[in-house]
Amino acid sequence: MKVAAVSVASYDRAAVESGLAEALGLLGGVARFIAPGDKVLVKPNMLEGLPPEKAVTTHPEILRAVLRAVKAGGATPVVGDSPGTTGTLKAAEKCGLLAVCREEDVPLVPFEATVDLPYPAGGIVKKFTLARPLAEADKVISLAKMKTHTFMGITGAAKNMFGFVVGMQKAQFHLRMQARKEFAAMLIDLANLVQPVLSIVDGVVGMEGNGPRNGKPVHAGVLLAGADCFAVDVVMAEIMGFDPARLPLTALACERGLTPPLAGIDLAGSAKDIRLNFVAPRTMLSLTDRIPGWAAAFGRSHLTARPEIGAACVGCGRCAAHCPPEAMTVTDGKVRIDYGKCIRCYCCQELCPADAVHLEEGRMLKLARRFL
Ligand code: SF4
Ligand code: SF4
Image (cartoon, protein in one colour):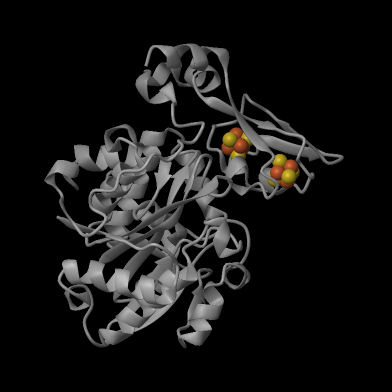
């Protein structure tokens, strides 16, 4: 269980290439992961079409370096993802990934058509409907971004696989798996099904606060890589300054023996001792995981942060269109939330283009925080 953590100071092309070479070298070289002739699907984080400096998406230079490494290994790369709100091509153009694909002569495959993939070994999901290009590839490389996440605490290598769920079908999983632990269990099934052969995290500039879209870019100067996406996520959490045992996905992955905690991971590289202090999302403390199922509704109302619409709202309706339980309505440009229906998935906060969705802790949650 080896993870490479290397220092990469900027997105200067030479610096990124050298950082990736160092990371892959520590892991035994690219040939350990891909073979000549393989069709390799590289899956960046393309959450939305925003410029690279917003730190929402994997940086174009990281993608370029990975595509070159895949080609150098004799394999044929393709790139794909399913952004949260727009089509793949439009998002890829805005975040600079399309230009890299064109310059490197690598096809960008929109995730639109789907394929049913039975997964009898799944702990919570026995069948996924995922983007068809997954079934057409020999290998997958996860190319995630080091970011906080209002619902899951962090989003890294394993969560990046959620992009294989096409478009609005993502909302169905939020409806079916409303508790963070359930959602984490679904993500673990998904990552185990996809089985990326290599997981890389772009942490040169990450995101802190209320990520994964509306947080603040923060320079971390780190690139992570490893064969095991769960181990990479444990390292990522530690470097960001969060305890993996208190994050739903890494905690569950450790509990199931899918990865050891940090002490059991063979961590190597020039950035292996870096520890940062990322600002946590306002929703990091949710007490719903600590109360019994019969009290779930009470817990959701009183022991989580709730979304509230701020003055910056422009009435675009995107939040309502993506709210999984249809708890939001827009009338005359004014958004209303039915808190009885709201499942605290924070999709509205994640997708709001005006950063107008604030996350407010109720009095009980604030009080409880004093004792934790
Ligand atoms: S997405 Fe944001 S700006 Fe658009 S209606 Fe919702 S809160 Fe307002
Ligand atoms: S209002 Fe926001 S947090 Fe509540 S269910 Fe809808 S999208 Fe999720």
